[in-house]
Each structure stands twice: as structure tokens, then as C-alpha cells.
Length: 414
Image (cartoon, rainbow, N blue to C red; front, side, top):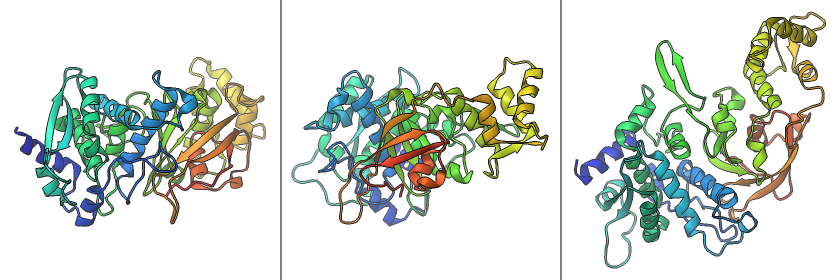
């Protein structure tokens, strides 16, 4: 297909048929620009593009704190973050490539004399786009560096989104989604769908956040197939509308996109050890998944299933003895406190029990600027009412018993 037809086909993957002019306008006015106060923080202009900005920001933090090329001590004080941004963008583009020999794309506005065009409709924008093809990530990096004016301009996010889509291959995006076909930008609000967020985080546009592939009456529903470099936690899990798997909850680097009903933000910690899921954290995750009412207890038969998942090598007599120790009054239920006491009498001896946490929100508060919230997370038995913020509720989907004390401001998920 020629480039114009390829771009049009990509647009049909991105937008729903009934996309509104307001949604187009918001997405056609968002580049990758950094804040004045927090020079490493991307600034969001309007609702919608956070589904692209937050994953890119997550990889910016991952590069600044955990890559071999960076110095963690200076992550907040660089004079110029262009190279960091381009590294994050090129990495996302490369991860999306289906096969090692597949083409990599960058998208740019056609060369022009004079100032950039005024805000275009999406159709006009598409007619101004030109494609560049490469085979190596280094070539993509050099291309992006040469296109910084476009990346930082009003069409930067869309140009990047199309670069990722075409590098993945439109047929492979549809293959990733399987029977759960959906546009990457939804209506009526113009939010990024889970398929788009997963594509940017993991390289595959699957529609679910669980681990692996689930079978639904013979229909394969794909989630996250391998451990992600950066992860995701979701406020929707607190409402039992989804269950984020370990591949996103325990990523390689301690950086997580936080999802709410209408916005994406990011948390990260300099403490690398917290990404590993300890035995106690896994036990809490399995218990919480079966505590459907959130009452802090599960049925006796259910606890047997949880224990078999936790200790697959143990014999059945030992599993039944552990369950009996948790339900000494023969009530037919096991309380979470008894579950913890029997399995982990000394608490979580594997865990880092106190660590720093930063939070990023690309939308500045009214009259303010984008700034990071900073605080300390402490793990242990804490009353969850101590910090009822949405960010804390989101964090508790990974660390069930924790509290976070913010020493700057209490961050917002919205």
C-alpha cells in the first residue's frame, strides 16, 4: 500500500467512526513538552492524551533511574531532557516491532518553509504526514532527534502514536486484540483504551491486564504475556472491575502507570528491590482475589485452593493442617488476620519495608504547575482509612497493608 493508504488504514485503527471534533482537537494539540518547574515532567494540555503521555513518562523515569547510560543521582537536574525523551520513544517503537527483521517507522510533518501550520483537523493533519522507514533502533533514535520540532509541536503525540502503530503492523495490532477489537482512542471521552496503553507499555495491543491468555468458553482472551519493564496498577481493581496480573504489578523496574476511570498518572521509586513479589505479597494477592465482598475473610474450601497455589510441592495433609490452624473455631471461614498469623508470624521478612515514592500527574492543578509529589511508603498492618486517597488505594492493590505519608502534597489520580 502507498503511504497515504497506510496512514488512512492506521487512522481507522485509532479512531471510532463517530469520533467528535472535540476529541480530534484535543489529540491534535498535544506534543511532548516538559514543565518549567519539573524539567523531566511531560505537561498535558487537555483530557485524553494521558494514555500516551503516562507510558512515555514511565519510560523516561525508567531511563533516568535504572539505565546504564544515566546517573540516578542527577535524574532531576539535567539541563536538557531531549535525549532522554527520544530514548523512551525509540524504545517503545522498537518493543512494538513484531519480528526482529520488521520495519521501524517514524512519522513527521512534511518539510515546509515558514512557520508550522495552524491547528489542523485530523484529516488535514494526516495529509501532511510523511513516513520514514528504518531497520535499527539507532536509526530511529537519530530520526527522532532530527524531528524534535515536530515531536514537541502540537501533533507530536499523534505522530508518535502512528510511528508505534506502523512499527507494530496494523494486522498485528488486530491480532493482539483478537475478538476484543476496539479503537485505540474511545468515544465519547477520547480516552486511550487498554489496548493502546498495553501497546505502549509492553509492545502488544492486548485488551486485558491479567497474566497470559484466559479461555472464555473456547475463546482466547490475551493479557500480558511476559513481565513488563515498567508496570501498571489500576484503581478499577479496587472496584473489582479488573485484576491486574503480576506481569504488570511486579515489573522489572519500580515504575507504574496508575489508571483511574478517566486519567493516567505515574508512580516510581528509586528502590529497585520493591518490584519483586515476595511470598507474603503473593499470598495477599491470592487471598484478596477470592475475598469478593472485601470483608477480610474467605471460605474454608477457598483457603485450600489458595494454599495449593502457594505451596504446590506440599502434600495434601500439610495443606489441610494449615487450613485447620487458620480456622481453629471450625467456623468454616478463614479471616485474613489468621491467614497472616499462621503463614507469616514474623511478617514479610523478604520485603523492603520502607521506601521513597514519587507521583507524577501531567495535568497541573488550577493556577499551578506540574510538580512531583514525594512521600514514604511503609509496609505493615495499617488501617486503610489512614490515607483514603485514590493513589493510596491504587498502591494497595500491590501492597495490601501499607501507608504512604506525602511530605509535599497529596497527589491526585484525576
